[in-house]
Every structure is written in structure tokens, then in C-alpha cells.
Length: 83
Image (cartoon, rainbow, N blue to C red; front, side):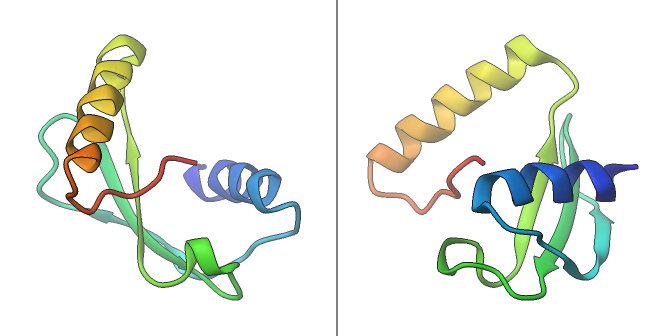
């Protein structure tokens, strides 16, 4: 499921075994991506607090979306850093 895959990616990013406070919960409101909210139990500083996972169903559209989000962040708007 999404839980195990997400923990594998996050653990590879941090270099240590990560765990959830609670399993990810599906959030409503996404236009085309599946969105999950979660929080890690003992995260490094860059992953503290509530986090959001967006699962994009199409690679090309996801890449375009990432480019747009980075451009928005470059303009000074708060934007999460993709893992």
C-alpha cells in the first residue's frame, strides 16, 4: 500500500528508518492527484509537522506540475520541497 512505499522513500531520503504518527489519510480537494496527509513520529527538521503527499497519476503532467510549483516558489510563495 501507499504507507509502506512512502516510508521506503522517506527512509531512503533521511538515511534512517522513519515511522508515521498515524497512517496517511486521504484528503479531499485535489483536482487530479490523490492527496494524503501524514506526520512522521521522529522526523529530521526538514520533515517536521504535518506533511502532504500528492500522487500524480501521469508522469508527464506531474513533471509539468513540478516545474510550475518550483516557479511559484521562486517568486517567494511557500512551497514544499519534493522528496
